[in-house]
Structures are given as C-alpha cells and as structure tokens.
Length: 120
Picture (spheres, helix red, strand yellow):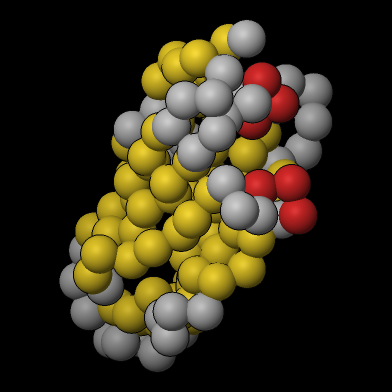
C-alpha cells in the first residue's frame, strides 16, 4: 500500500505564488507518474499536469508558463504555482501511478487533497 499526502495549500491573493507538495510513503514501490488535478465544487477533477519518472512534464493549457511540476526525489513532488488567478481556486489532488516491487502489480492512488483559495 502506498500512502499519498498533499500539503502546502492555503489562501492567497491574485498574482501570488504557492508551492504544493506531494509525498508518497510506503516501501518496495516505484512511482512512474505523478499527476496533479484540481476540483471545484460541482465539477469533476480536472487535469493540471504530470511528471514521469524520467522527468517529462505535461501541463494543461491554462497553467502553462505559470505552474511547474518538479521532483525532489523518488517520493516527493512539487507543484509550483505562480501568478495565481481566482479560477485556480479548488482542491488540488495528487495522483500516483507505479509498480509494487513485491507483487509486481501496478497501482494508482490519490491523496486527500489540499485546498487552494485565490482571492481577487
């Protein structure tokens, strides 16, 4: 079992920056893809961006140039958000895909989410 936890959310002003962290804990696993999603009330979780174990990144169009995903190590990833807008408000979730070395099975887990509120 892999546990995923996000942190770093909060309330900021329009144009501010914020950095979210996603940490995976457990043992004997390898994460192949880390992804961030944002959910606002009444809507489905929307893809924000992702990073692979090889370091390749993909972003949703509306955050390109403002958001950056990076890896600190095999178990921690960051979502750097700059020039925040009110439409960036939502609960940000981290999703991880990977392989359990003991069972050789693939997995997909979500964190609990962290709230980001941007006020104009």
